[in-house]
Amino acid sequence: MKETEVSMRIMDFTCRHVEEASALALAGYEEERRHVPGLPAKTDIPGIRELAENGLGVAALEGGRLVGFLCCYPPFENAFGSTKARGVFSPMGANGAVLEDRAAIYAAMYQAAAEKWVQAGAVSHALCLYAHAKELQHQFYLYGFGCRCMDGIRLLRQPAAVLFPQAAQSPKQQESRYEYKELSTEEWADLYPLVFAMYRHFQKSPFFLNRKQPQKEEFRRLFEEENHRFFGVKQNGKLCGFLETAKEGENFLAQEEGYLHVTGAYCLPECRGSGIYRCLLDYAVSTLLSEGYTHLGVDFESLNPAAYGFWKKGFDIYTHGVVRRIDEGILEKK
Image (cartoon, rainbow, N blue to C red):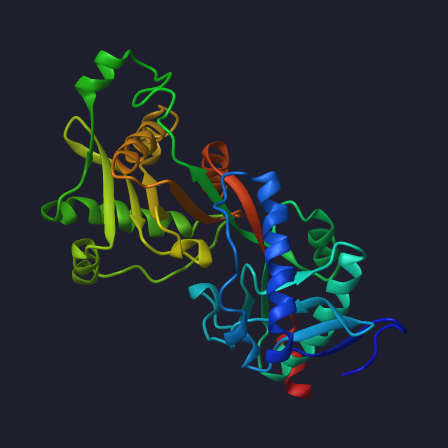
């Protein structure tokens, strides 16, 4: 590795850097918690040692002290599940730096790490940055990155108006037209057309996500898994919206006790704007709260305007996933 400044050196990230890197990662998380108090308290950030073993990370040292690190998962095919690109991803907690000159440290680290990533054949580069680290987002914007994904969290409390808040009709009228419930395994066939419509919605402008949708039997098996739960709203007996939750997520918060993650959501276009989906979310929150859950998380693509408009109202955004797709032709020069 080369020296990027007189006082700072960029080198390979190894296991000897893990302890200092963990402290930097935890400090970055705690900084974001000051902006988003609903994030659960943590005493350590998991997974950093495993990332040190793939040789794709870099460390920034100044005077023998670790001032920054940037690691990633091993390269994977079909980045974002809908491209033909090989990608790398630096998840939440896999990168961090001291506050002083943080953007410059990240700029130097990415320059060194990106060389490794391209040598590994990865042309899609994605990093998870904290939502309130604006100077880092700007630095990566200068390097050709744009926002694609966001993570949000909601501390579960009893909704201000459980079911039917400020809806177009009175509660009594709403109750006669809409039914909110957790769907049973026998109702999977009623839900599948909405899942089909959701994937068709993904393909529309400006989202343009052409992800492969599950076939009926594949979806039925998923529906019957104990880990997955589906909440639905019916209008005059017809299912018109659903919310899927699971004990999983794309960052380490999914391991927290009392945490569930939204893994699917859709409402028929003709029913949007009526308030019924907010009511469905309230119903799910009330149900989960009664069972002892404390946090509900969601991740969504910011380039999906329907998702962005809805989730940012009821959830606190705490990460931005930034992405760059480099010129694949550079691989021919390697």
